[in-house]
Length: 415
Image 1 (cartoon, rainbow, N blue to C red):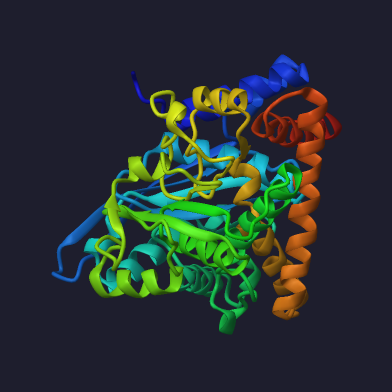
Image 2: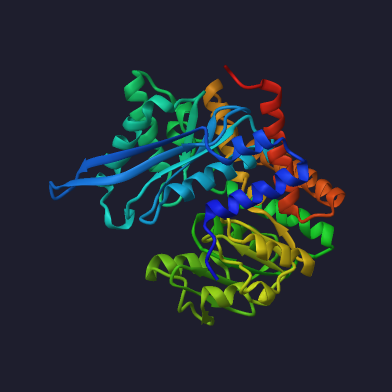
């Protein structure tokens, strides 16, 4: 079976939502393509004094609800089609949780694991200088993504500010706290994910105390999600990273496994656990499965072996449309990525607001606002799902696409 790309999946999801919404054909066509795609050649001097040339891009999907918002990722396999799909998903995600943003995504095709800190800084600053005219706190606000972090965002902010001639902390989110970052930003995606799982468990009358959880991916989102679920009384029975996974029927402490990973480079070979593959992790007998690694992990080929009651998508696009349908028919509650992992962009929005007003909110306030926003969105999606007798992804897409389409209708086309 030919593996579907992120873009073919995103377009198929849009088609299904458009069909359900009976969307105007012109608006559907408009939403299939981004408003703007920037492709740049990022050239820097490498540490050995050679010239490195890297392909960079920024895709701005649609901004009818507000400025573009989306991450910057550094990955050797980055393609323009993947970035276009991610930008589209960001548009829907922002609309679902009712943020005044449109979707964007960007990145550079590079292998950051093989680059020094100095090379990454030069790469980031050059990239920002090339797309500077299309960035800004009221135009396009970047954030961290795969293989970028707080430090990367500090470089983005400083480069943008230097080119403007004054400090503009609201030009980027996901920054270190000392230069305008928000409390709670690092764990925001994971906390939002856990809150969605909590609400789904209530609906299913699933007691989280000793509920079995399996987490694929042990990066920022996966590790913090495992830690939060563990603090809620869940039993973390399996976790994995790119090297493989571990299974322990009695449960593991995520912080201890994280310490092991820092020491050895992987979660595998952890004490009193059995090594498993990532494929085996997905098929683990558990109550809650959190795919927080890569796209296209749950497919038509393995969906029959998924045994979880709740699947909460921490990664973007881990489930194919074919598998979506099969999980729904099996009665599995799937919380889609465009809702489940929206905590990151919600707290990014809070950071932007704090920067615009030059305020700094305490962690309790940030987390309370996050909880209010994501729980409200969860029940709006769930209510539409019941009304349409559909799975939650279809309902979430209908909600997001519908809000964007309505904004386009209201504004009209200019000129």
